[in-house]
Image (tube, rainbow, N blue to C red; front, side, top):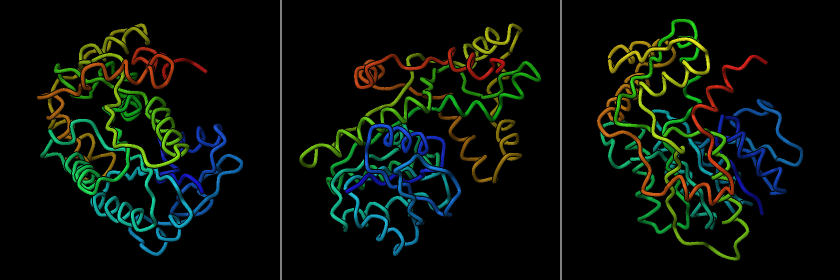
Length: 289
């Protein structure tokens, strides 16, 4: 029996596949198109689509543990609910689901409420699962790094309420720890929800200062204008996603993104090491190879 990783070619999914393979796990990587990515030795590529029921039935037929990561899309909820129902049908009782922090609070943000719906299904059906609720990814800054370095402005309108940004490598490591814990257990384990956050709370001003320190020149915070942010994001993707991101930024400004008390320390105990800091991340991406 094996661990099926969905979203296996993405930023987090590819890291999860690699780390599971390094740990000696029997891994299946779900892909929509064969040959899109080279996987580590021993990883089995499985072709399927989360909305194609026959392909998912086949993919889940010899799986003991499921890592469910589905991208932000208009049919995200449908993808997740179909996959989880098929997992129950296949008798899978070990699940790790990648949700988002404050899914129940950001009720007007489509992809937050979508993930909260999936969480409610997992809870109502008493599925043996770990729900991971990560905060804003540090790696999202790659979308605006050229603006920061070229114009000396940090344009993400995250405001002043504070965001405990987390490195995607830490998210992947937490996911792997939970997948292996569940996969290696003699039976289904109790439900667990983990806020996956970074070790510090960042504001627009403090994020700009981190870039200033790494670049050795002034970087200013661009302010809280979410309408301008939506306009910028619309140049990189569909309008529905740009608007979704605008609503998320408004929520961040109003509520921040903070894990439950002691969340970061709990993660560090789980991983056996410190979490990556934002300053370290910025130094890494701005260093000359």
